[in-house]
Length: 544
Image 1 (cartoon, rainbow, N blue to C red):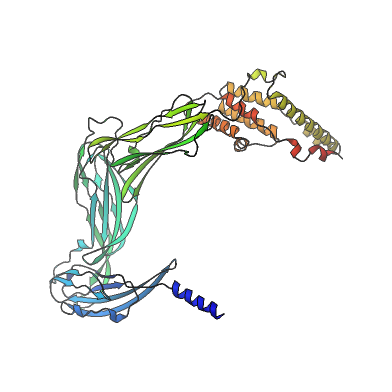
Image 2: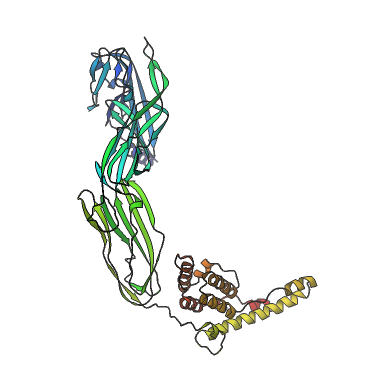
């Protein structure tokens, strides 16, 4: 027991957090200040300290030092504990002019000095220092179609009640917000400002001078209104309005030497996703290939469509391209991705040709290419045997060989089961009222498998994809004795899955395509229903 207690105490000591002072920060609530007014000096240390750790005697030469209050706090987030000690000192400057609040040193860690501007009484304080806007863009000149990143920072030294940050006003260009607003803080001249950052993307449509009338802010804020002759004031709501400076950017036209669809970007690359773990592919097995074009400082609508040429013997089934724009590491990045299913139709060695996307480098002022190298693939014959499908009218002839002996055996078994079930039902129906028996006689007789196959063949001959899908679903529902969905039919075998996907692709394709009747019928006839011997005998259950 003593040993267990000792180890528990030792573990607690080891796991206990170790706190050490690492930062001292000094801020003031406003700057400039009027002579005779009091302002608040905040000094924050990231440790639990004694009140006497701060020496404010260095302020007595230039300021009247009022009440000083000390507060401590401890926070724990996900077992990460932080501690803080805050001193709030009321100060009033003794004279006008620029006064320096010296650095404070606590246990060898110092804050930064603050330069305070003190104006005489009767002079209005510069209110624009409480709310102002700074802007930054990534280019002094640009090209037609080039994305200009326009970043707006709204600085608030007072509490915001309500307000609207409006986008810059521009003629002859497209503008939209990129990403979400960011909310942070910065210290300027010893004052802590709340900073709201927003990023816009601007794309000029025509060459010439692009005039950007700066973003603006309009709203209500809370400011401190000092009482005459007193140390303390009260907060009142005041309307505030500010606007960024007007800018002019020169827009250059498309260079006459450029060849291809116009794309201007800081950098553009092509990437490919490919099943690298497979060295050989089978005929009829789809190969999934994803190609992505990634460009920096451009909009996704400016990225061109990628043409993917294929050799004879390969068919492609592309999905809808995906376009997106996002911000990464303070850079606007756009991406165009297209996923294609490539289906080999015959064995051999094929070369997927090289893909080149031209783009213009505005820094080097020359045309460059994003390149995806050529790729060679080897296609072998399918391991699943295929059989030529005879014409539709020959499916009813009993002389045919191949799958017909097996199909005849299946039909014979189904007929035998049907006969036994019918006899059992007939014996039961003798005890039922005649009205129920009459209702049963109204049911339509079951269709045979041969009738279902003929319906599929006739739909394929008419090139009616919808009718073929319905006929396939009806055939397997009749054959398996339960309602079958397209997903369930695709799950019966890989060959059926491929055939059904191809049939649905033909149906929903923008360009009409002929139904691959041979592949569809091969898949249907190749499916082997599980042997009835492995299941519990239905006939045995019916015997008395």
